Length: 288
Ligand code: PDD
Image 1 (tube, protein in one colour):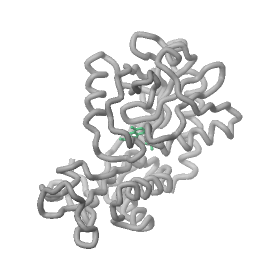
Image 2 (cartoon, protein in one colour; image 1 turned 180 degrees about the vertical axis):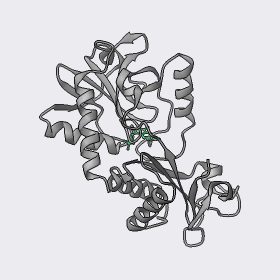
Image 3 (cartoon, protein in one colour; image 1 turned 90 degrees about the horizontal axis):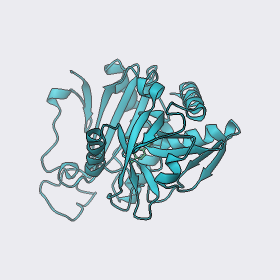
Image 4 (cartoon, protein in one colour; image 1 turned 90 degrees about the vertical axis):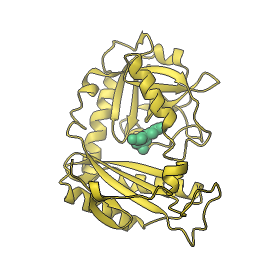
């Protein structure tokens, strides 16, 4: 690949982009990120991703590297320079490079935050074959830290979860807390559908406040669907009529198997299928 990426103010061929070994994103995972989808060359849910980035930065006392307008220009420039039609833009902000390793945060007046963005081409975002057959998930203990509402780059345990799923012949994993309740997927929010009701965990520090989740719940309410924001167990999910996940990259993705149990008919159900259609349609209309 020969992408043009953005690094701390410059647009560079990916092979020429450099970040310091002392960058706190690299040494401490002292960094936050966002993933924004692009459909038809336009950004999906961009305002939501900007708002969540601001929140993540604020919660970590990390200075902001750019205004929302500048972020929009950089995203658009990368879409244009890389000719992205359908794909994603990854953005990462780090606490920067203090020139050495130290647990204490550097003085933000002296050390500027770092910012990196790159594009990913995903021609099958909408016509994703996984969405037509549905995915299988396994359940694993949630061993992540307690501030999952902050979108940090500490993704080792979610990556391990993904590998555990692959090893088990599944596609992804759902995290389960010590109380037996599902928190979310490795990189998505989790839902079940029972007797026409859409059930998903309420927002708290236990889960990432998904931008796709917010949009999907809004569209569901507009379509007169009943939404219940509450936690559920794996046993309840296995007995549900449908299950699905949402994220900026998967949109609405049906889940047809949980551990050894087939969910519903074992095929994507009507609620997840309809929500996926609505999400894609409405997101395209509102894309910028
Ligand atoms: N992941 N929960 C977790 C743990 C996530 O990592 C994500 C997103 C979500 C869904 O959030 P959103 O709808 O705003 O994408 C929920 C992104 C896509 C990723 O890490 O690639």
